[in-house]
Image (cartoon, rainbow, N blue to C red; front, side):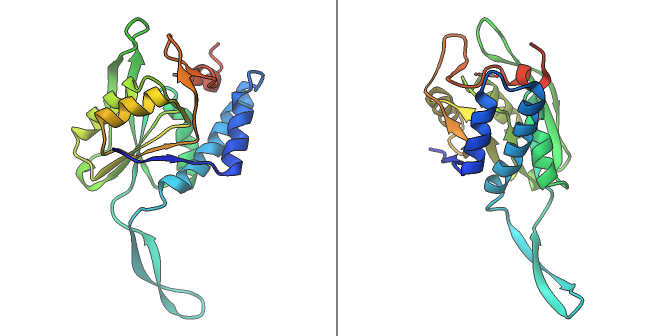
Length: 209
Ligand code: URA
């Protein structure tokens, strides 16, 4: 079964609480998500491979560590994943970016793909799939299935918030994909929303409600 990492750093938890409040403005919701994404990225990239290179400091030559291999790929599940992307890119500015467009059929809550674009040479790359909410798990499962077709070296999944139902579904479909989250909430309601949650992440990021 895949590992679930709960990022419980006080800064992460504090910012998440501010985001959950229904009176948080679009502006502050977006800014907090950006900051949270940066903090989550530290945890997600903790085990990336390193290599030693020869450099010269002003005083002497030395062997110093840099991140090894081809660039990481962040794959954003549209549209809410975009809200996490900026924060992650400010910490890993050289990362490549992929997009997958999925919408949730409001009746069946299943994921329907309408867009897919990722960098070349995926077989040499480590991928982080991002979406703020892991709710039913349908979008994440479909996105990861699609990414797996490109045969990347590894895949991780990052969200802000999830619930037991979402974790169970994703672990069952992709037991090889570790999950990183800032919180595991109580439950999913009949409309596929996480409780207590933070509402519709896309609407809150883009101010569309
Ligand atoms: N997507 C959201 O934006 N919010 C939820 O609670 C569940 C899915």
